[in-house]
Length: 560
Ligand code: ADP
Ligand code: MG
Image 1 (cartoon, helix red, strand yellow):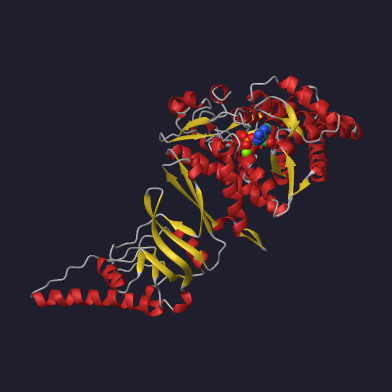
Image 2 (image 1 turned 90 degrees about the vertical axis):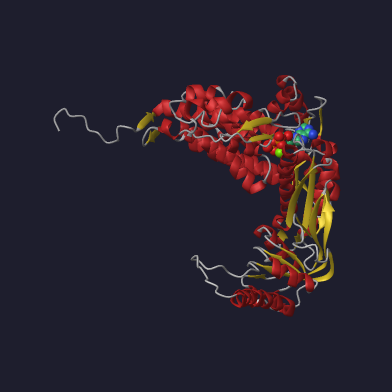
């Protein structure tokens, strides 16, 4: 080989090793947490995110913010994944999980500076995480399925600080009502709760409809707009004469031939409608089109029909009424039909909608959400999503915890005690873990415009005195009993946040080498002009602003 350098990586690849890799990853992870933290809690602010195509989202929701930011940096993305996992598993607590994850990295950075090895930090963090979860389980309060008041408090806590804030009492009632009405022995399937949004009206006017609401008109005015004791057919097919794949030309030489041609088409349509009538259907939801002629035949038979039903709506109707979705009109049988007490066209929120009520399987409801503008409705929908999720989880586990930083303060105290029993360098990591958990009450205080140190001191002293549900009232700045105040969250939201934050932090800490095939900078979207459409207004870094590893300095700067 002589003195020839040996080339093992492509010229385009980038490599960062050792301390540099570690500190780069920590910086990236912390930056993500920093971007989300100002939204935490009842007094958290919202972010306006302008996407690369100019679409605007105004939100307070951690996971939405991080997803809309289109973060490209691989390490930063691991923190985004924390939020995504949290969202998938428990619907709420996304910002908290990310804030704790970021703080775990920050604490680790200090320990690394003191020459504590990453492996010791990992060990300590893992032990602390296990201990923390055990402590939380012990402290959790029981929630029964008929504890409506407590469930409503949990539903409302998940909506705090979101656009739905003012109407959260009313919405919490609806959410608990919705979840309990679809709950059965097998658990809660939130797929049975359909969310329809209506722009116009006040949020308080939102309502829960027993059954399925479909944003559709009947296809012809000649059809009934109200059907009682309806046999419902759901058809994933068109009531049209199939067009040939290839364009054909029919040469007609005399008018009779044309007549015959049209007659044949009419006969086919007639046969389809006859099949539906013979099966005994009173209402038809077709996922595809319905020919004018077929509409006429259906109307003549007194059938209410809807065309181009969204397939998600069709699935919901099928589930609710007990209908089988029929793929081919010709195959329809009486057995395929579902049942609804009434199917009617009503004016809902200013537009005509079809409401399928008194369904066979009563466990299907529609939450009709109203809001003044599109953006308001979207944010209410996200808040409701969180809220439905937490009520479902609470019903499944039957366990809840006070919020407002109470469990985190408590854990911090207990973990510091526990650290003494750990010993070695891991002890330092357990203590660091305790500090990281306190980032929740600290951030709640900061976002509430309070002095975080005063608040923490106050919280600690109350917890020391045995007030384990003392939390921070972000509105008054006082430390009060969160259980009495009705700020309650499911146990699993807290344990999941600890789990995923720990996993992500540990994973990033273990990395001492980042080898990127090709130029990572090339992978970023929007390149340098990323800041133009997303950076300054969002205060959250433009899309792709974090793109390349090399671009971290600038891209990250925009995030903090
Ligand atoms: P996340 O995405 O983590 O759910 P949120 O912005 O919803 O973020 O904030 C959740 C935090 O706010 C939790 O720690 C919760 O206990 C706290 N919180 C919610 N309502 C109140 C309240 N009324 N007073 C104090 N803290 C609250
Ligand atoms: Mg929340």
